[in-house]
Image (cartoon, rainbow, N blue to C red; front, side):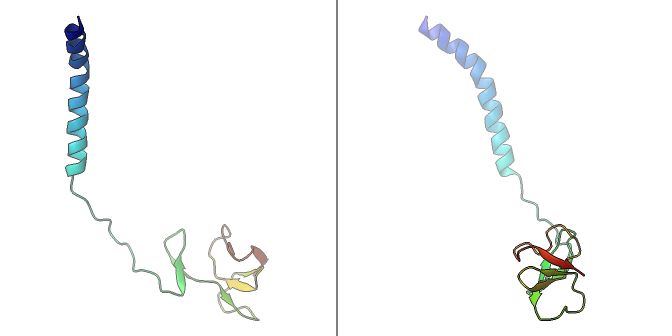
Length: 97
């Protein structure tokens, strides 16, 4: 009786186990593909924004530098091209320019 039950279980499990093994080995054996670089890396004084553009990092100063778009609450000036996330890590926006 135990032998019959074992054979029935094996008959139902083996096809699934074989399919899982073949699928896993195929996935593991697939060659890796490189992701193309669409632009050069941003300079150390810049960051990549959500559009993929390099934007000048916020900087400190008494007056607004050329191109600044917002004054942050910590006194730094932001060059952000989008309102969302502007001055994050700098206390938020104090004033939009």
